[in-house]
Amino acid sequence: MVSVKSSELVDAFEFTSFGGLYEAKAFVNLDTGALLCISDDMQLEDQARQDLDASDRYLALPHKNDLGLGRDLALSFIEQHLPGELDRVSGYFHKRGAYSRFKDLLEDRGAVEAWYAFEKQATEDALRQWCDEHGIECE
Image 1 (cartoon, rainbow, N blue to C red):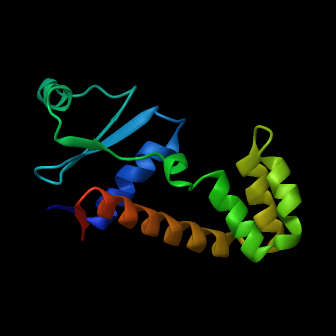
Image 2: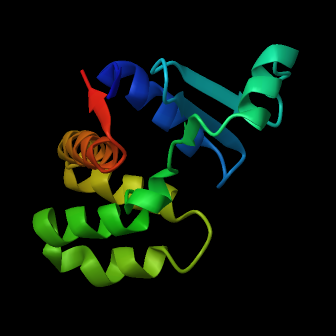
């Protein structure tokens, strides 16, 4: 079983989830546990590109939406912490700029810190589960 450092895994996961879906990618080398991050803007060393293209020993990290850590997580937080705002926040996600309006609401309600703690815990739990499903030990 290969192992990865939890903090490095979170960093690589955040890299993949920062931009739009599939703009950036991160991979776990299933032999070494090394993490490889790439994006459309980055030039990948020839050897790394060859290794990635030729090997089945690299597993792509999921995007936050693949793990339900986007809209679904925001709605879950609202349901638990600000249930009276659920319809409003649900409506946010039918238009562009949803996260901006969501975070403005959190700011108005004094719930920003609670949101960040909730999001951090959910991300760590989802990544731990993802690692378990793929036979990766998370240190």
